Image 1 (cartoon, rainbow, N blue to C red):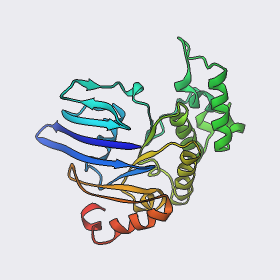
Image 2: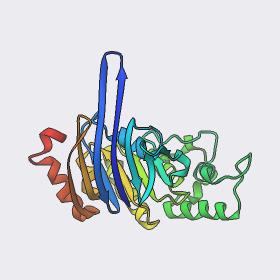
Image 3: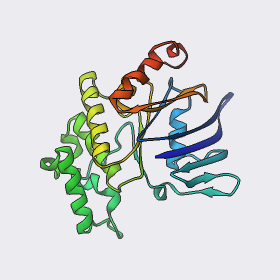
Image 4: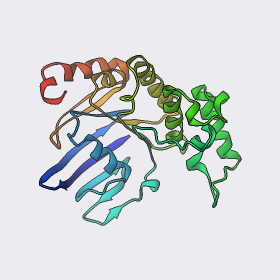
Length: 248
């Protein structure tokens, strides 16, 4: 994944105002946007996903322009070729596990799956160890299982990149550690790079890669490490060391 981003967005709520002015260029299997809550990380992710239009600027992903305010480019979210995993998973409670995973693959008025789509869903369920729960509803699943289903749904359309917004924050500490490993391993197995939003140094320790440090709507620093735990330990050391007071 090669991401080039230079955007500006001003949000107002009553007398309060927040200005995002973020710019960076990064490439690799893992890009982590790190910083305190309210620093602009999620706004940046939403802009890349096409869920929020910046006031001005440009976003290029793998050489393709997704947003360009000067030239009037704003590619619709569904056409951007990225997958998005929401913090609350956003599963459909009335659909089965298999139907949730295949939701974005359906064609026609009723979203029926063709043979290729059904095979894709089956392959992903096997990969995540969820084939035995294909007909179950989300209400029957554990927190970790629900997260896997949300992840598979985001991966089903073979996106060029997977965008993850604080994906582990709702899990208990032991499950959180396991799911970090599983999410990274599944993305690696299907060859999908990730962009992760987090304020947790332990996420850095697992994912590594390019770390973009945010504070008060600005990119304060960017460092590149090896992808995965090998570089992640050094990446987490960056924010736990001399820079932690500014970004943790």
